[in-house]
Picture (spheres, rainbow, N blue to C red):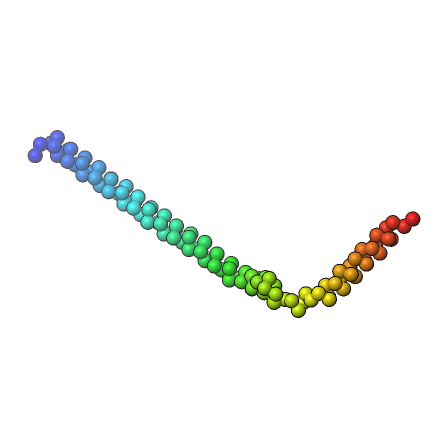
Length: 100
């Protein structure tokens, strides 16, 4: 075999091995990136559903308030008496401030 041809063949083998190492490194990096991305989106989904789990009682109470479940707490007579008392208290306070 010609020495020049042998040298070219050895350089070609050396470059092929180097390229193979680079490609393997890129493949490993890409796999790690995908795994981290799956973990990231999994955490986002878990946090979303977890927060809905903890907020569910609040949503339930607001829904019952909206649909009239708390009507016995807010009957018209008690609201009228509270508004009447509050307006009288405000009027008394204004009278005290405007002492002539």
